[in-house]
Amino acid sequence: MKRKSKHSFPTRYLLLILTGLCVLVMFVSFTLNLSGGPLNTVAGYVFTPMQKGINSVGTWFVSRADELKSLKDVMQENKELQAKVDELTTELNTIKLEQYELDNLRELMQLDQKYPSYEKVVARIIGSDTSNWFNTFVIDKGSKDGIEKDMNVIAGSGLVGIVIDVGPDYAKVRSIIDDASNVSGMTLSTTDRCIINGNLESMNENQVIEFSNLKCEENVIGTGEQLVTSNISDKYLEGILIGYISSIERDSNNLTYSGTVTPAVDFKHLQEVLVILDKKQAVE
Image 1 (cartoon, rainbow, N blue to C red):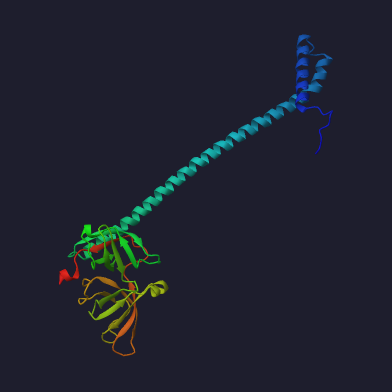
Image 2 (cartoon, rainbow, N blue to C red):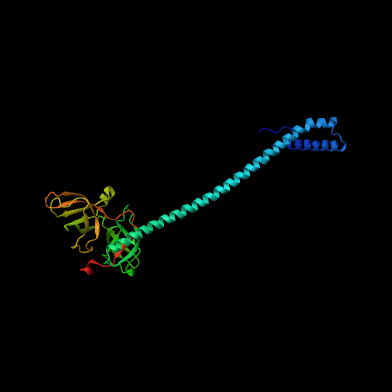
């Protein structure tokens, strides 16, 4: 460890001595009226540079203090601007969310008008399984709201699925894309019937489900054809849009066709649904 020299003289003491000497010389100069004498000349040579140095140091400190104040002002202004940006970002996100919910409600209203003969209730999705799709999910309406098992559920542009379980304040829905789902469907233009099966694997790969056992005349049905629920379905109400044929091919028996269907509903972004309170048995 480096020791301090015994003869070292603290700088602050030296500065005090020089300051005192400067004051003493100024006092003597003014007292004895030596403004034009040799003492004043000596003082000019000795203390003028010292005074300039002190002024320079003082100016430097004042400049640094001003810069520090400016920096603090800039930091405070930046903090206020950041708070304003955060506030505006939150407001924008809220507006976007409200707009998204408004668009969903507008779609549900249009869908409600599309099927005016059915009584319906709006429900919000409050839970789903762990997959990427809403193949099974829970809604916030139940038996207290008139919901029963086997009621049809719609959203977006068409059929979502069917109620499979009901509690007082909730209900569980299985959608048409679930592996356990099968729906009796038909082509809208010719009313030829087929079976539409859910398939999560094909949904993950190409966002389609499957249809089979379509009996129709050759080259009458092609891609883009609308498939709706058929009149012979035991649980689904007739005429609800399921989706659009995206591929079709003749089966090996040369009697039927099979292929894939692009669902009419976006099963990745469901939030609200309409539950049709009329059941198929009650309509028939």
